[in-house]
Length: 173
Image 1 (cartoon, rainbow, N blue to C red):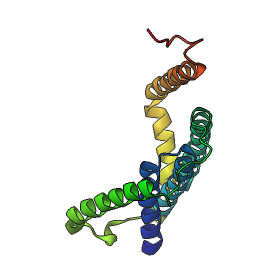
Image 2 (image 1 turned 45 degrees about the horizontal axis):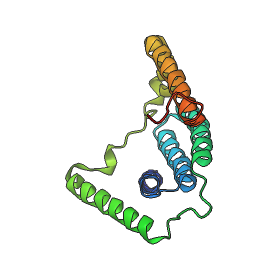
Image 3 (image 1 turned 180 degrees about the vertical axis):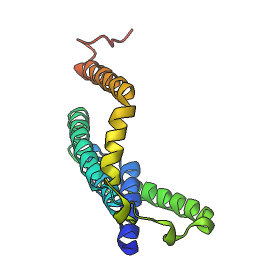
């Protein structure tokens, strides 16, 4: 299981490098899908399959909206890929930064400190992720409402920006 978790974490880091180094929205959206899949795999490995499923569905829905907006705003006939020179240089720089940061924190890293949530399953009445979701909705109700209003405001802002300079409120002065 440790090897699977290491591979999922490696895929997560490499997907983040693809997102950060790629200027084309098409391949960055593909990197987002890979990163969300790897992150949800890490959650499944730690014993939270329900939370992983919910987050994966939410991430895919959000990324679909982001991809549609970015594809509509930046229609490139020949987008740059990971094989092109500037993108490869950016990716190499980011990977070098990851290696330097990893070597800085390497002394306190142990693979044995990855406990799974359901190790003591005989003593549990509920799974950890289901109980956590119930607690989140019980204790975080006002924050959920505030977040919904913020997302609605962000939607209106994006729609106003995408409408254009001739018809929207953003005009050249």
